[in-house]
Length: 229
Ligand SMILES: [Zn+2]
Figure 1 (tube, rainbow, N blue to C red):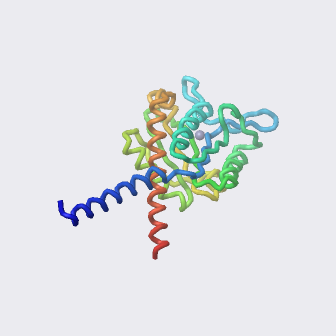
Figure 2: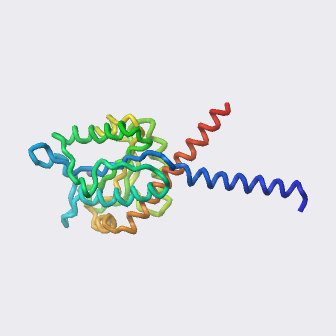
Figure 3: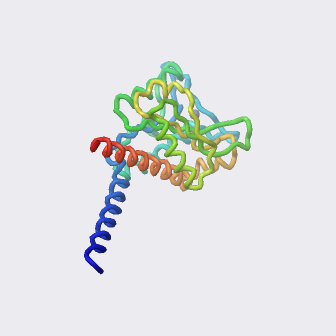
Protein backbone atom coordinates (compact mmCIF):
# COMPACT_ATOMS: atom_id res chain seq x y z
CA UNK A 1 0.00 0.00 0.00
CA UNK A 2 1.42 3.41 -0.90
CA UNK A 3 1.71 6.22 1.68
CA UNK A 4 -0.85 8.36 -0.16
CA UNK A 5 -3.47 5.60 0.12
CA UNK A 6 -2.81 4.85 3.78
CA UNK A 7 -3.10 8.57 4.61
CA UNK A 8 -6.41 8.68 2.77
CA UNK A 9 -7.68 5.64 4.70
CA UNK A 10 -6.54 7.16 8.02
CA UNK A 11 -8.48 10.35 7.25
CA UNK A 12 -11.56 8.31 6.37
CA UNK A 13 -11.33 6.30 9.59
CA UNK A 14 -10.86 9.52 11.60
CA UNK A 15 -13.96 11.11 9.99
CA UNK A 16 -15.98 7.95 10.62
CA UNK A 17 -14.98 7.79 14.29
CA UNK A 18 -15.66 11.51 14.70
CA UNK A 19 -19.17 11.15 13.26
CA UNK A 20 -19.92 8.10 15.45
CA UNK A 21 -18.60 9.97 18.48
CA UNK A 22 -20.64 13.14 17.84
CA UNK A 23 -23.74 11.06 17.07
CA UNK A 24 -23.62 9.11 20.33
CA UNK A 25 -22.65 12.22 22.29
CA UNK A 26 -25.31 14.52 20.86
CA UNK A 27 -27.63 14.02 23.86
CA UNK A 28 -24.96 14.19 26.58
CA UNK A 29 -25.92 16.84 29.16
CA UNK A 30 -29.02 17.83 27.23
CA UNK A 31 -31.93 18.72 29.49
CA UNK A 32 -35.09 16.82 28.65
CA UNK A 33 -38.36 17.60 30.42
CA UNK A 34 -40.76 14.70 29.96
CA UNK A 35 -44.39 15.56 30.57
CA UNK A 36 -46.77 12.62 31.03
CA UNK A 37 -50.16 14.19 30.28
CA UNK A 38 -53.19 14.50 32.56
CA UNK A 39 -53.47 13.25 36.17
CA UNK A 40 -54.38 16.57 37.77
CA UNK A 41 -56.76 17.44 40.61
CA UNK A 42 -57.87 20.83 41.86
CA UNK A 43 -57.44 21.98 45.46
CA UNK A 44 -60.89 20.51 46.20
CA UNK A 45 -59.73 17.04 45.06
CA UNK A 46 -61.74 17.03 41.81
CA UNK A 47 -59.95 15.65 38.72
CA UNK A 48 -59.55 18.54 36.28
CA UNK A 49 -57.28 16.87 33.70
CA UNK A 50 -58.44 13.31 33.19
CA UNK A 51 -57.36 12.22 29.69
CA UNK A 52 -58.97 9.47 27.65
CA UNK A 53 -59.97 5.93 28.57
CA UNK A 54 -60.31 2.73 26.54
CA UNK A 55 -63.52 0.70 26.48
CA UNK A 56 -61.67 -1.84 28.65
CA UNK A 57 -60.91 0.79 31.28
CA UNK A 58 -57.26 1.58 30.43
CA UNK A 59 -56.69 5.19 31.46
CA UNK A 60 -54.38 7.50 29.54
CA UNK A 61 -53.19 9.17 32.75
CA UNK A 62 -51.87 5.78 34.01
CA UNK A 63 -50.36 4.55 30.74
CA UNK A 64 -48.43 7.75 29.98
CA UNK A 65 -46.62 7.61 33.32
CA UNK A 66 -45.35 4.08 32.59
CA UNK A 67 -44.37 5.09 29.05
CA UNK A 68 -42.59 8.23 30.28
CA UNK A 69 -40.50 6.30 32.79
CA UNK A 70 -39.25 3.94 30.08
CA UNK A 71 -38.65 6.87 27.73
CA UNK A 72 -36.74 8.71 30.48
CA UNK A 73 -34.47 5.69 30.98
CA UNK A 74 -33.63 5.64 27.27
CA UNK A 75 -32.64 9.33 27.41
CA UNK A 76 -30.58 8.79 30.58
CA UNK A 77 -28.67 5.97 28.87
CA UNK A 78 -27.50 8.59 26.35
CA UNK A 79 -26.26 10.91 29.08
CA UNK A 80 -29.21 13.32 29.10
CA UNK A 81 -30.58 14.92 32.27
CA UNK A 82 -34.26 14.10 32.60
CA UNK A 83 -36.96 15.85 34.62
CA UNK A 84 -40.59 14.72 34.86
CA UNK A 85 -43.69 16.84 35.44
CA UNK A 86 -45.30 13.84 37.17
CA UNK A 87 -44.25 10.31 38.08
CA UNK A 88 -45.73 7.11 39.52
CA UNK A 89 -44.64 8.26 42.96
CA UNK A 90 -45.91 11.83 42.54
CA UNK A 91 -48.88 10.82 40.46
CA UNK A 92 -51.27 13.75 40.95
CA UNK A 93 -50.56 17.30 39.94
CA UNK A 94 -52.50 20.15 41.55
CA UNK A 95 -54.05 22.91 39.44
CA UNK A 96 -57.41 24.64 39.36
CA UNK A 97 -58.07 23.98 35.67
CA UNK A 98 -56.70 21.97 32.76
CA UNK A 99 -55.55 25.17 31.07
CA UNK A 100 -53.73 26.35 34.18
CA UNK A 101 -52.17 22.90 34.57
CA UNK A 102 -50.83 22.79 31.01
CA UNK A 103 -49.49 26.33 31.39
CA UNK A 104 -47.64 25.32 34.57
CA UNK A 105 -46.13 22.25 32.86
CA UNK A 106 -44.72 24.50 30.12
CA UNK A 107 -43.40 26.94 32.74
CA UNK A 108 -41.65 24.03 34.50
CA UNK A 109 -39.83 23.25 31.22
CA UNK A 110 -38.94 26.95 30.87
CA UNK A 111 -37.54 27.06 34.42
CA UNK A 112 -35.38 24.01 33.72
CA UNK A 113 -34.15 25.69 30.51
CA UNK A 114 -34.95 22.45 28.75
CA UNK A 115 -33.45 21.58 25.38
CA UNK A 116 -36.65 19.63 24.82
CA UNK A 117 -40.10 19.78 26.38
CA UNK A 118 -41.46 16.38 25.41
CA UNK A 119 -45.13 15.78 26.09
CA UNK A 120 -46.35 12.18 26.23
CA UNK A 121 -49.98 11.33 25.48
CA UNK A 122 -52.24 8.61 24.10
CA UNK A 123 -54.91 9.37 21.55
CA UNK A 124 -58.59 8.55 21.23
CA UNK A 125 -60.92 8.74 18.20
CA UNK A 126 -64.57 7.84 17.55
CA UNK A 127 -63.33 5.81 14.57
CA UNK A 128 -62.11 2.64 16.33
CA UNK A 129 -59.95 1.69 13.33
CA UNK A 130 -57.67 4.70 13.72
CA UNK A 131 -54.18 3.62 14.85
CA UNK A 132 -50.60 4.78 15.16
CA UNK A 133 -48.28 7.39 16.63
CA UNK A 134 -48.88 11.08 15.99
CA UNK A 135 -46.40 13.94 16.46
CA UNK A 136 -47.58 17.48 17.21
CA UNK A 137 -45.66 20.74 17.29
CA UNK A 138 -46.63 24.40 17.25
CA UNK A 139 -43.82 26.95 17.34
CA UNK A 140 -41.34 27.35 14.48
CA UNK A 141 -38.37 26.39 16.72
CA UNK A 142 -39.91 22.93 17.18
CA UNK A 143 -40.80 22.11 13.57
CA UNK A 144 -37.49 20.55 12.42
CA UNK A 145 -37.18 18.63 15.69
CA UNK A 146 -40.69 17.21 15.29
CA UNK A 147 -39.99 16.19 11.69
CA UNK A 148 -36.74 14.41 12.56
CA UNK A 149 -38.36 12.52 15.44
CA UNK A 150 -41.37 11.58 13.31
CA UNK A 151 -39.16 10.26 10.49
CA UNK A 152 -37.27 8.10 12.96
CA UNK A 153 -40.49 6.62 14.43
CA UNK A 154 -41.67 5.82 10.91
CA UNK A 155 -38.32 4.30 9.95
CA UNK A 156 -38.44 1.96 12.96
CA UNK A 157 -41.49 0.24 11.49
CA UNK A 158 -43.94 1.62 14.07
CA UNK A 159 -47.39 2.37 12.64
CA UNK A 160 -47.71 6.15 12.30
CA UNK A 161 -50.71 8.43 12.08
CA UNK A 162 -48.99 11.63 10.96
CA UNK A 163 -47.37 14.87 12.04
CA UNK A 164 -49.03 18.26 12.32
CA UNK A 165 -48.86 21.77 13.66
CA UNK A 166 -51.44 22.27 16.40
CA UNK A 167 -52.11 25.05 18.85
CA UNK A 168 -52.14 23.77 22.44
CA UNK A 169 -51.83 25.70 25.73
CA UNK A 170 -48.76 23.64 26.69
CA UNK A 171 -47.06 24.74 23.47
CA UNK A 172 -48.14 28.35 23.70
CA UNK A 173 -46.46 28.94 27.06
CA UNK A 174 -43.31 26.96 26.28
CA UNK A 175 -40.30 29.16 25.56
CA UNK A 176 -38.24 26.08 24.76
CA UNK A 177 -38.63 23.66 21.82
CA UNK A 178 -41.65 21.47 22.50
CA UNK A 179 -43.26 18.50 20.83
CA UNK A 180 -46.04 16.14 21.80
CA UNK A 181 -46.05 12.44 20.91
CA UNK A 182 -49.34 10.56 20.96
CA UNK A 183 -48.00 7.03 21.33
CA UNK A 184 -51.13 5.38 19.91
CA UNK A 185 -54.92 5.19 20.18
CA UNK A 186 -56.63 3.87 23.31
CA UNK A 187 -59.81 3.66 21.22
CA UNK A 188 -58.18 0.94 19.08
CA UNK A 189 -57.83 -2.45 20.82
CA UNK A 190 -54.61 -3.38 18.99
CA UNK A 191 -52.98 -0.09 19.95
CA UNK A 192 -54.30 -0.44 23.49
CA UNK A 193 -52.46 -3.77 23.88
CA UNK A 194 -49.27 -2.27 22.41
CA UNK A 195 -49.47 0.74 24.75
CA UNK A 196 -49.16 -1.66 27.67
CA UNK A 197 -46.41 -3.77 26.05
CA UNK A 198 -42.99 -2.85 27.47
CA UNK A 199 -41.09 -4.09 24.41
CA UNK A 200 -43.24 -2.00 22.07
CA UNK A 201 -42.88 1.07 24.27
CA UNK A 202 -39.11 0.61 24.37
CA UNK A 203 -39.02 0.29 20.56
CA UNK A 204 -40.91 3.52 19.91
CA UNK A 205 -39.08 5.33 22.73
CA UNK A 206 -35.70 4.31 21.28
CA UNK A 207 -36.80 5.62 17.90
CA UNK A 208 -37.82 8.93 19.51
CA UNK A 209 -34.47 9.21 21.32
CA UNK A 210 -32.62 8.41 18.07
CA UNK A 211 -34.62 11.16 16.38
CA UNK A 212 -33.44 13.67 18.99
CA UNK A 213 -29.85 12.42 18.67
CA UNK A 214 -30.01 13.10 14.93
CA UNK A 215 -31.68 16.48 15.48
CA UNK A 216 -28.96 17.70 17.84
CA UNK A 217 -26.20 16.25 15.68
CA UNK A 218 -27.50 18.20 12.66
CA UNK A 219 -27.82 21.34 14.81
CA UNK A 220 -24.30 20.93 16.27
CA UNK A 221 -22.83 20.54 12.80
CA UNK A 222 -24.70 23.60 11.55
CA UNK A 223 -23.52 25.76 14.46
CA UNK A 224 -19.93 24.55 13.94
CA UNK A 225 -20.14 25.60 10.31
CA UNK A 226 -21.59 29.03 11.13
CA UNK A 227 -18.93 29.59 13.81
CA UNK A 228 -16.25 29.00 11.19
CA UNK A 229 -17.90 31.45 8.77
ZN1 LIG B 1 -53.92 13.30 26.32
